Amino acid sequence: MRSSMIPLAVPNLSGNEEKYLTDCISTGYVSSVGQYVRQFEGAVAAAAGTGYAVATSAGTTALHLGLTALGVRSGDLVLLPSLTFIASANAISHAGARPWLIDVSSESWTICPDRLRETLETETQKGPNGVVHRESGRRVAAIVPVFTLGLPADMDPVCRLSEEWDIPVLVDGAAALGASYKGHRSGACGAAATMYSFNGNKTVTAGGGGILATDDAELARLARHLSTTARSGDDYDHDMVGFNYRMTNLQAAVGCAQMEQLDLFVKKKQTIRARYDRAFTGHDAVEAFPEPDWATSACWFSGFLYRAAHPDVLRQKLRDRGIDARPFWKPIHLQKPYLDCPRSDMSVCEALWQSVITLPSSTGMTDHEMELVIAAVNEALG
Ligand SMILES: *Cc1c(COP(=O)(O)O)cnc(C)c1O
Image: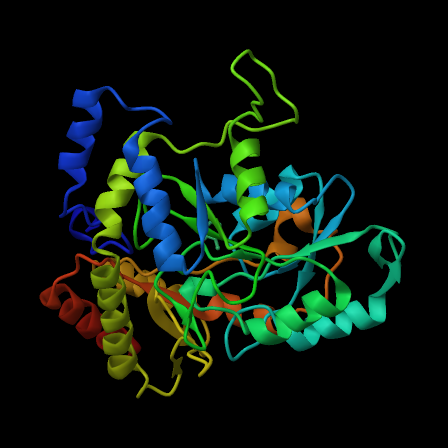
């Protein structure tokens, strides 16, 4: 069965990837210097709607870089939705901080602005060094909304809180390239910076890699400086504790070829979403993935919410039929390294996460494969 399984999400390398890679090798520019890195940054900045983009080795390192550039330091807390991929929490830990976990809203599966406000109002106070978590005395240094599955969070209320409390917003928009919020591109919804990932399972890939996108020239300069060992001259002078987080020209070459197809890929993802929604939401136990009216999702993965017992049994049935049906993120507050993080009530994400069923969503899927998935799901749902 395994070999004929329709996979969840595989890269679509049907464009200029090979051509650009060959160019890197024949010119010798395989490392972090080369035209593709700059070109890739330009293409992603344009798609994100930002003035600047700094390419990195991964989405996780772009987040770490962004947090560091925004001044997050050892001992701080960073507000984060619990429903996210573990990398968002890990980047916070790498910066020496701890996540402060907030529940998501059921209408979007993204950070709940009401919960966020309530948490800030009841559990923090403003002090001379910023906002402080009363119980632990830790400074609250950033808010990191996550654009779940490429769906923007409700950023207007989040950004109002950011202004009111003077806490910067760094978006984990890992899979949100091509999404929009109230007509704004996903990097232009009010955050200080937005991270994108180009891991192999994302809609556009660079084999691996990330971007920190921002409109803030100074933040971009600092992030770029930190990402390249904070070198301050040609003679091994370095003026800060930097990172080696640059993207290579090889990665960027693949990324450039992928960016040429971004619109096409996102349209395909949205088509898959629409077809699955149409096919399955007639079943009693099935709910569509959320689509609040404030945003257009980039629809990284599609599938459905299965509001009946034993979603694991349904997933197994589908896998037995050659359909790679998977679960979704296990919330961070249930993960071993983060069990003791401060957190809000988690009733929404706890009721949600085990019921999510993700289905094959590759941009290279054929109509026939989509029909096979739909037939298998309808059969399994009975
Ligand atoms: C993929 C992903 C990441 C990590 O990106 P990498 O490039 O794999 O480091 C972080 N957050 C979210 C929400 C993701 O989906």
